[in-house]
Length: 450
Image (cartoon, rainbow, N blue to C red; front, side):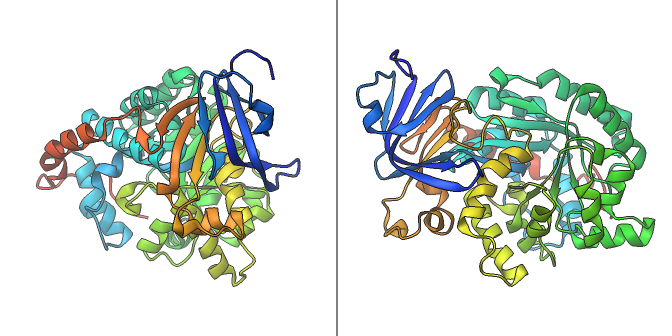
């Protein structure tokens, strides 16, 4: 550390750290020094007592953690929170969501993204992977509000080649934007809405331009079984034969991944990851969940996600972390899996790797971007602390996040949002609701036919 003033010093906290084997640990009465948007040091509170800093945060009673990453969402869909409840997947898409989405304007997307970013900042999410439409508006919101994001313009084959071209143009135009806080991806919707030729063309574009791919695949067991019955291949096999598995690919959901898919994923030439959003699977009554343990055994990182709030009703990654741990215990019949430490690993380094940022964020260590959250454990529901990882995973809540920092910039301090006017967004969004929710036109942007 130099003697010149640091940008920010957080002191008196407990810091979640990773050792050289990536095991979760904690340093007590510690401090985090931030300079030029990077973590310069994780050290003792005593060591920084006299170190000058532009800003200091006294974080006694709090845990400093890497900011959470929401590895798959559709942020603007917060505008549809609660409009399509208690429905099977096909009715949810065809009767409600896709007819409403045909009404979307760029302004609706902007306001939804703004509200979503506010919710995520307040819940300790510092980075999100978004896959939606009118993504120029989302990129502008990310630039303004200070978050980090991995963005892709979604497309269907029903849009013709223009959909794929727009996805590429968006990715190239915004790659590295917002001072490097925005990374981009190609974003075909799914194998059941994007045909093999479009997927193969997407794989070629990914190689040509050095871009990753983010798509839904094998979302549930019905999709896998229907694909096998109709085409003789699983959705994962479609990704292999079209070359998608030769790219760096993030697969959303994967609760329909079958045993026969595992060797294909294990031998994929690109960096493959899966995002799990368990609350939605429970709501849709899908019979299986993301096979986290089987994917772990073949070296596939599984990041935590929420999906969109139209299906999940929230963008709460804390809940996704706890549910992932609990559902894994239930489905494997093993209370020792996932442990709280393993769940925290999924929430930190594995989630960062899933979105291609494993060398940038995901741990609090020198040289990493300073994406940091401070979690207050002084409340009655988190006391006493006998097992700190268990307290964080199973007792703490999103509302216990007191401060959220991205690239060394404080976006929320002591629960006060500093970069988004929530009241103004809610009022404007409310005024637009009647036009957005109208389904009288009978149009859909796409049909759900697996």
